[in-house]
Image (cartoon, rainbow, N blue to C red; front, side):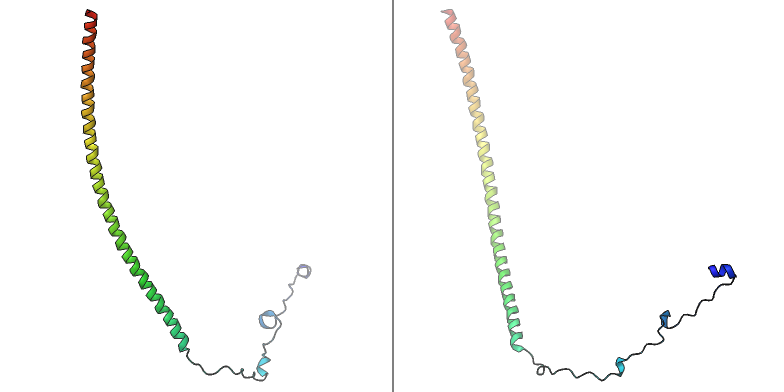
Length: 139
């Protein structure tokens, strides 16, 4: 900028060089010229199936299935028994409520009779007391 302001001419920009302005002219692979790698080491024998292990796993899965079936059967049986017990308890509860309602009605009626008798005796006592006071006053 200073040069341009003094001389009046813009300086030219140098042409970038290499790949992506890095200065590297070409990629060269040196490893392609090396010798071939050594063969891999020997491994175990040829592939053989492990039938003994497979049958062990299958037997374990079969055992799990049998256990699950047994537990499901037990759960179903237990649920049926619990349902029957619940229905019986509901039936007993309904009978007890009916009996309690009947007993409450009978006790209410007995209480009403007793209170009526009490009231009539109190009235009789009051009239007897008045009569007795009148007799005492006359004497």
